[in-house]
Amino acid sequence: MRPPRPPGTAPLRIASFGFRHLPPRAGCAGADKFVFELLPRLAARGHEVVAYNRIAFTEPALPPDSYRGVKRRTIRTFHTSGLEALWHAARVTFDIIRHNRADVVHIQNGGNSPFGAILRLFGKRTVLTEDGKEWERGKWSPLARTYLRAMTWLSARVHSEVVFDNVFARAEVEAQAGRQFALIHYGAEVDYQPDADAETAVLARFGLVSGDYFLFVGRFIPDKGLHHLVAAFERLETNKKLVLVGGAPAGSDYAAAIRATADPRLVLPGFLYGAETHALMRHCVAYVQPSDLEGLSPVILEAAFLGTPVICSDIAMNRYVLGEHGIYFAAGEANDLHDRLAAALAAPDALRARAAAQQRHVADTYSWERVTDEYVSVFEAKGRER
View 1 (tube, rainbow, N blue to C red):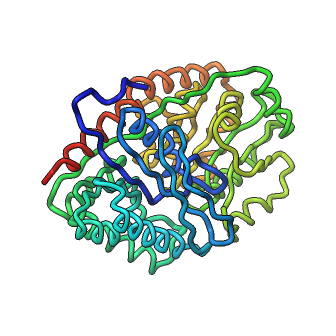
View 2 (spheres, rainbow, N blue to C red):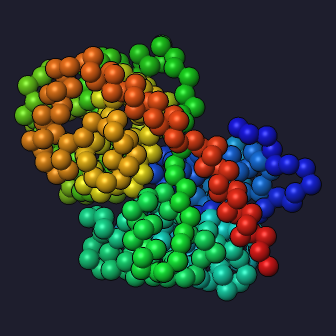
View 3 (cartoon, rainbow, N blue to C red):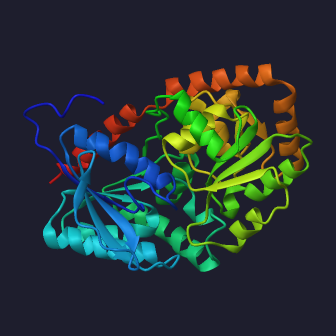
């Protein structure tokens, strides 16, 4: 981490919400990984950071504590898709205003913009992070997609700043709003020290051998394209396995259909995080990201940074991340994905060479310290406005 905040400059009071949990736990996703990397770095630079964790009413209440210098407050909500995030955001907003916990409020996801409007009425500066075209995700009902689309209009007008990590989503919203927004990418660095014994234990727990499996990590939702991957792999003539790490936190018909495959080569470990996931990345044949829709994927960045070959759909955002170094298949085309998987097995030397190029590219291009620098600049510019 970088040196603490320079002497003589006042610390900012920053509150953050719109994610599930710091640190990530079962059911968490990219937003949780993002705050896991960003918020402790802000605290290390001397800023006062409060993170609002989200748990269900059925879970036991947790007292306020801290994690890597970040103060944590846990607020409970309904365990109902679509309502839990909004109710949590409403309660967090009330807590911030009632106790005056921050000067700058960092919010994830434009669906929370109505609460940004309330915070602005009470004199708070708000910085929204929008990580992609959330309004296009297949997991949402038509009503929810209409709501999220409407929130792009509000987001563009209510917040002190809107930050995108997705250049294509930013361009679309800028064209609609007639104003410019910040672009700050995710970082790629993984703070992971390989330990041969620990990695062997992880592999053994799931019946795996190094170099003997393909890997996916993420939520089991339609826009991740897992149905394309399973269909492609089931036709692949190989003794290799396919490891699908993750699931659906509340269960779903889609996740159940993925798990219902009769192919004995599929391994479903459930949710894993941190060192266990990184160990699996380091020892797989290739990491596969079959998304139909994606923001700037932190999982692609991590896998490539660790030197793992990445095979992904040719959607615009994935091409933006890996450029000429990616191994792409036509999005939504299981047959083309099957051919890419077969080619990876047939030409291991070419696969390793492409992995080395991907690793150099993301290490040179994406940095969490740079991300933190740029967010500090935004928070300081907006937090000190009067």
